[in-house]
Length: 256
Image 1 (cartoon, rainbow, N blue to C red):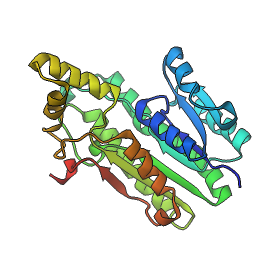
Image 2 (tube, one colour; image 1 turned 180 degrees about the vertical axis):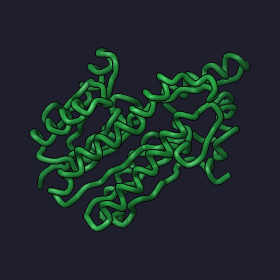
Image 3 (tube, rainbow, N blue to C red; image 1 turned 135 degrees about the horizontal axis):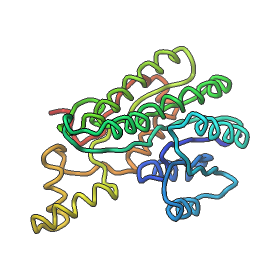
């Protein structure tokens, strides 16, 4: 049987890379892409065999680059079976001080890039009569936090986009869902923990609890592997009728 192919945007980052690695171990071909330093990109490439992977270190907000990734993928692996829009950025500032340039950049990366990838990928999924689209939103796709106007707006938009795509593909063997994680222990979050630990003279574990207790009632971080496994389930036959959903994985954050 033909190996299935997964394209994860932002797969040079912590969560996207974890998803790609998980599916790679499950036998999928993987498309690794994102915008990062050459040294980081070189380390990521070592994790995958070139016979089962393609690599792109490019700006994903440009439609020409999106088409380049899609066309190269289809040329090598015939189609794209699973699309995961994971690329995203964050910037924290009050709305009256929020830089317009950063606002527009966040909308491009967090919302426009997923639209472009879905638009270019759907025809190939329709041709193969099967496809799974998963958009990594956030708890901020469902609720809001202070000083996160652009992030919240873009992630709410991503949840809405997922619902529209689900409706437009409802009679086809294609599903589209959004996943809304709470705090995930990534390098960026660890940096925040380190600052808390230093400023308040706490142990790493105490600093973790300090960060989590305001938002995430379970007081546990979401693991990257848990997100990957949830996506893998959404690709299963058993999940064929799950579409248009915004699935929380947030330790009861949005239950409050």
